Amino acid sequence: MSSMLVVGSVAQDTIHNHLGTHPYVLGGSATFASLAGRLFAPTKLVGVVGDDFPASATQLLKDKGIDVSGLEVAPGKTFHWEGRYSPDLTSRESIKTELNVFADFHPKIPASHRNTPYLMLGNIHPDLQVEVLDQIERPKLVIADTMNFWITGTPDRLARMLARIDLLVINEEEARQLAGVHNIAKAAKALVAMGPKIVVIKRGEYGALLFENGTVFSAPAYPVEDVVDPTGAGDTFAGGMLGMLTAEDRVDSASLRRAVIYGSVIASFCVEGISVSRLASLTMSEVKSRYTAFARLAHFANDAELAQLR
Amino acid sequence: MSSMLVVGSVAQDTIHNHLGTHPYVLGGSATFASLAGRLFAPTKLVGVVGDDFPASATQLLKDKGIDVSGLEVAPGKTFHWEGRYSPDLTSRESIKTELNVFADFHPKIPASHRNTPYLMLGNIHPDLQVEVLDQIERPKLVIADTMNFWITGTPDRLARMLARIDLLVINEEEARQLAGVHNIAKAAKALVAMGPKIVVIKRGEYGALLFENGTVFSAPAYPVEDVVDPTGAGDTFAGGMLGMLTAEDRVDSASLRRAVIYGSVIASFCVEGISVSRLASLTMSEVKSRYTAFARLAHFANDAELAQLR
Image (cartoon, rainbow over all chains, first blue to last red; front, side):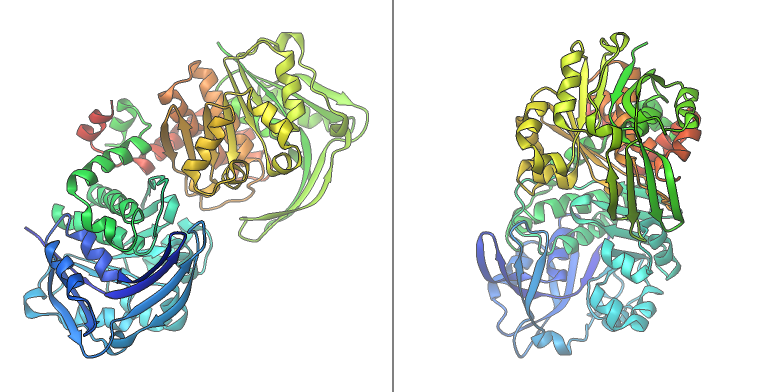
């Protein structure tokens, strides 16, 4: 069976939302992505935590079958992010970003991980993303996330990273910012010209767009009635997407579309609980049932019309 | 063959956009909706224009097969709206709204139109929408549009109208405003409780959501690369949707989903030209070809998965 590797942040988050304050809960891009990926395929995590990181958190990841042999423990404190969500959860303000041990992090990929065929580079400094690529054999698929901080702060380093990946997953606003054009179809073309032959644009409650091989796929979002905590939804989406591709062990138009939907499915669960609580309890039977709900949500063409698409 | 009636505004618009100024071009909710509906089914228009309304504009509507026998000509000037779009066309500012003959408009439904089975009440004062309902035999389906101006200005009159229609088509922000809740799934439930058993929420470049009979359908939007003029896209969507339902002459889950997609198809053409220019030249062959593109855009489930949905 194929396997995937996630490199990114492992954090403790303090989240203020409509339900109250949730201090030092488990967070980080690699954490969410691994907890999504492990539902589909063997998943390895590479990151760093401080010596204050609770043993219970490491145990949770292990209990979910995630290989944490690449999770480094460094002297000092774990990366800590504190944020406050607006009452309708559509925006958030960062109160604190304490990098702590993450400030000096350089990913060390264990020898046993260096030929993992599916790789996710979570949203970290593009130089660190490139350091990972320099340590591993060419995977079958490399996906990477990024954010406005690197787009404006280190555009040259970002360009160097983009030239070396296969699939970029990026927020809509950040796609526009990076491409320098508002129209999203034009923005996607501009991003493909920067390197990644596949671009997935995350649109939050509006779903996602997949651009590959000159075609577009529009994935709906599940209209969740009780959103509790959007933290990590984007990382969960990317991790679930890569997990599905890893499980299928092929990357083509049909598998990419299914993967985008499965990523959306897992993300729709993620937001239903604080931190990783819903992800941790999630089962494949729940995932499959919501996949069917997604198919129902998007279904309109009749058999004859669908036959034309083949 | 079944037929549809559209009651709403017929206007002359002055539009400022990235291409320049377009003075006194054809506009109005009933105009766009009729030009969309006529592609599918016999379409009648009821509205008012001033004696300055160009004969060429009336002729255009006639040439497209629209029954304009209910288009009243009153002494005075035609309703005139002037607006300026932002460079990325995502927002607009109203510069002038000159109601002119529209200020004293009371729709008069010709006797020949009173048993039209499919009715669209364009976005006008809710009292005028109710006046139309009082003049006609109960249609098979009544759809209505509204806007923030009536939601905040005349909420009681709006409530009276909502209690008498079958399908409300409304912008996302206005749906939230009218329902008093941000979460869109909850907002739709609140709107259904106000009267219309079917609610369609327009999300612009993010597509549309259809809520009916306890189910949700998410329609994608076509990622148009060269948007020229979004004016009338929402009216076009509603008119195209009703046109398709009129042509099928049945209102059920499957026909509503197809209608929402066909509405989106026509709206995706509408924005490609100034005013009604693209709508006026549009053919059913182009429409069918883009419908297939929509099916391709949204398609992910395989045959076995689709079989489960039946």
